[in-house]
View 1 (cartoon, rainbow, N blue to C red):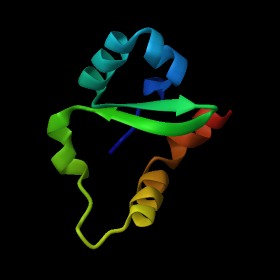
View 2 (tube, rainbow, N blue to C red):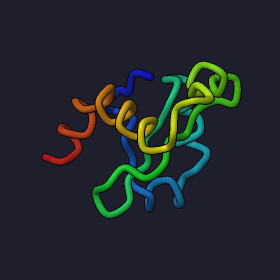
View 3 (spheres, helix red, strand yellow):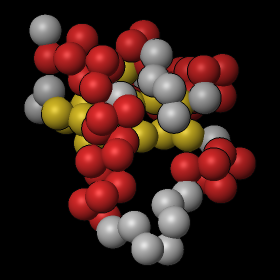
Amino acid sequence: MTINTENLVSITEANQDFSRVARMAYENRSVVIFKNNTPRYVLIEFSQIEDEKASPDEDVLAVSKRLRSSNRKAYEVRAQ
């Protein structure tokens, strides 16, 4: 999954204007929602679940590490 750094929103923004955040996910494939400057949630279209599905042998920690490494640039930009 590729994350556009313009699609990072705070949990407050998501709570206040969820329809806008959902539209962002629709238009740009995903939105990462941060809480306390930490990525907590990813909003994607339901149809993309199959693309992001982990293999049956992959545990939660491995999935987390894989997603973090593939989206490292977005996390670094958000941390600034």
